[in-house]
Length: 115
Length: 329
Image (tube, rainbow over all chains, first blue to last red; front, side):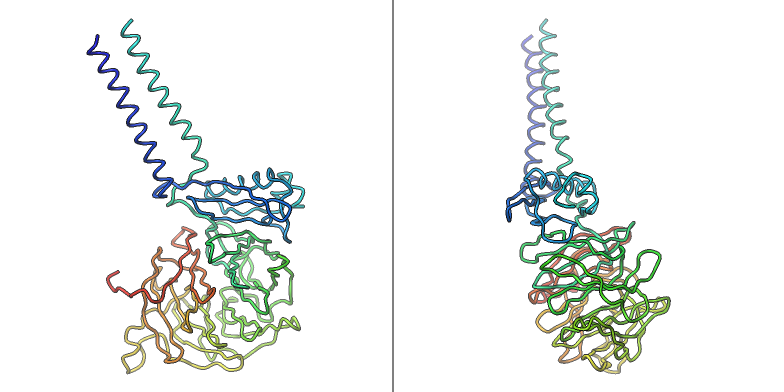
């Protein structure tokens, strides 16, 4: 009984150890950017409105202080709208698409300030 | 019972491990492999620099011609998507800047060679169509500006070309200017040093063009060919004739890098207009490529994007002319 318990406990310990080691290495990869890059959207307030940054691997890759893909220097009316569009851009980046937005896409998403 | 206890413990542990790893899996949408990160990747983009910001747009993504325009801030190493180009999506267009405005025109939409021409206002972030290019519709031309007048020269309209046209933004009109002495070509490179434009490289009939000229706004001057043709030794090593190269200027010297020379190349050469001599520099450190975009901002040289076989590239490299050239590199 004790012998079997010891085996079970050590198996569990090994599984847990491997899992944490893997997780740690993954966190390290995020920090030193060796293999996987984190893609994070960060809305920010600007000119009585909102813009967003898309950070890739810890540095800002896209800095969008105006609404993308439309003429003029417009800003998003709300943090939510900036975040929604930023998330679509981030999704394009992670799906190997050019991270550009068109006016039609923005209108279809219900971003009235892009019309 | 004790078996049950033991197995259930094991089961719980593995379940916990599974649920944790599937939690991590849901994060995959927010992660991307460094090697698979493509960003704004494309080739054959047009570019211009206004107020120390580079604007890069249009181009080809391997499937479609593009209309989007991105501003690149060299100090922050960040991209901002701007108002889309209002002409039809295209590749192999040309761009230049004069009097605080950017311009993009000519190019190829996948079916047609183009001669339309547009102005970008970086303050208003808007595009306006201007007078159509005066020459034939074409792609693979070069463009440059001298004294706030724009020029579009060479290219391919079904034939290889050496004509040269001047755009005056004050009158919104095109005038035919002096053609290159000879050396019809497409996919050449141009750079401007001290108000003289240098046009080099390019291809015609699948053959690299070695004729090399400068233009002062009125006349073309024939410079030493970029081939080993003289009896002197200075050109013995000149082996870089090719096309689709990126160019930029640092400290009064011109640079060409990457492009196609039989195959994709990383070779980088420096031109000194004072001596009319080329010197090989450190190879471009990224993947060998063609149809990259080169630009000069604040006396610094940059190479972005490009195409390597079927892969469209996104990376941005700054060139340091003082890095030692290593033949074995």
